[in-house]
Image 1 (tube, rainbow, N blue to C red):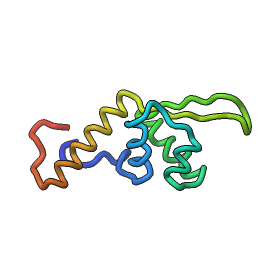
Image 2 (image 1 turned 30 degrees about the horizontal axis):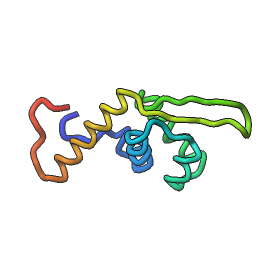
Image 3 (image 1 turned 180 degrees about the vertical axis):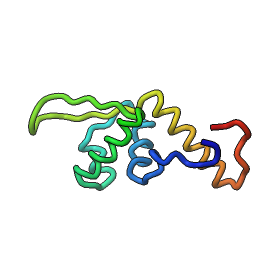
Length: 102
């Protein structure tokens, strides 16, 4: 990846969701929706992108109105988020990227 920011994480709502998940054991759909102040459909689309990338896992319990959807960051997601932060820190500091870093 070099000095480029990961486009999967870079979208503002996905970045915010990854930050929350990176600092918690898990988070449910309602918490993320309320914290990010987005609609159900927007959050669902953003989380689907993270799930498809392998950065987030999803667990669904129950059915209908009583169901709970919970998200958890995966090991790959943690690694991608850390790499994203390192790249962002480097860019903000105005430093050249480290050779061989991805």
